Length: 131
Image (cartoon, rainbow, N blue to C red):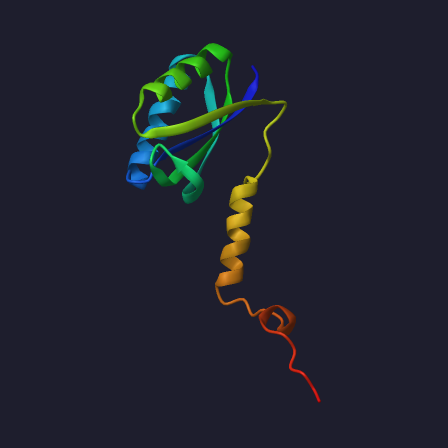
């Protein structure tokens, strides 16, 4: 079976529990049609670069899928009908990445930087001028 990466965005006013319920709903749609979800990542609430359907922020979720195309088609059809889903994109890949995605690795780096990690003097502030 072919591999797919599927990313979708939901409205900003839904809760994270509702996003998890949406992911579970779309996962069951795939499984009923013979597919399987290998990995799910919730990227959280992110600011959009421009407004999408009057929303400035959106919840992002990534699903790594192994399935035939009819199951993907049915899941995308369900997403088109759902009012909380703003956008979605499905890409066929040769194989899935192992480990966390680039977005989660980026978030981990930002968390380490902001949580108590002492920055070097060159990053913190410019060196004082000596006269």
